[in-house]
Image (cartoon, one colour):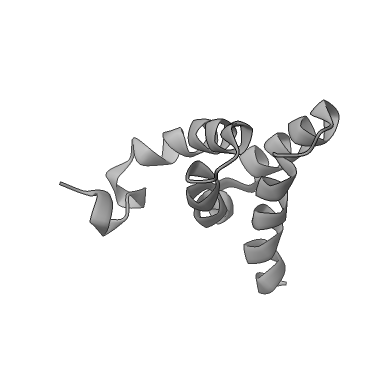
Length: 77
């Protein structure tokens, strides 16, 4: 079960690059509902080469970056 909580958000991030708008929207919704469990996958997506994945991941990650608790130590100044 724990493994699924870690792996599923990464699969959803991959679906953000899908050709189908509906699939991208569904993946976006699942990631937003996953909460904090999606943060590692969103960090991965925020650096993705696909601009759609990058943009959506950064947008979903933004609320977590406003709380310094979630910012990794290497991003803190």
